[in-house]
Image (cartoon, rainbow, N blue to C red; front, side, top):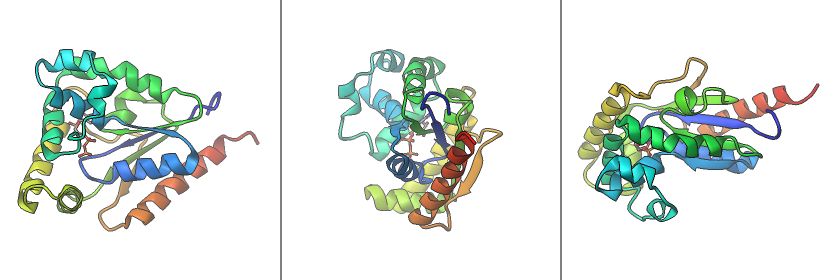
Length: 203
Ligand code: CDP
């Protein structure tokens, strides 16, 4: 950590638990949190030219109440393959990561592209079946089979794209939450971060 800056990158596939872990970690350590998926969801839902939407993204776009829907997730993963869209969202994410007082960013490419020098990198996973069940319980939209199909399609698109594909950074710590309660997953993430913060304090 330099100048009170400490950056935590949390990546992983849809509904693996990134959001819950990120919010809990941010609250525990007093860091700011950015859910970068919301940026892509907002671009996807804005309609029209996605590149123009990404370049002109504003607070009101991020305040829509339909950004958590299945449709928004699908729209997000479609615009997320466009390199110009990703480029337009890069500076905002890097500025957020560099803020004083610490930052937690969760997404798909935080540890690999946005913050390759992050102090802690976590890659949160779970089986597709577990993730679909969680997402289904969370949003109560469609059927479980439809949600599972969408989770698989989104995984394939996110991992298969040429620009910033979803993959763990070489130095990421893997956290498989398939058989973990949310409290246990949060505890593991917090222990890892506390150890790293401790390591960086002057001896
Ligand atoms: O909450 P969930 O994990 O389902 O999705 P999200 O994090 O809100 O991300 C929605 C979609 O945005 C993903 O499927 C990715 O295609 C895209 N995304 C991305 O490409 N890069 C990021 N840093 C965050 C999201």
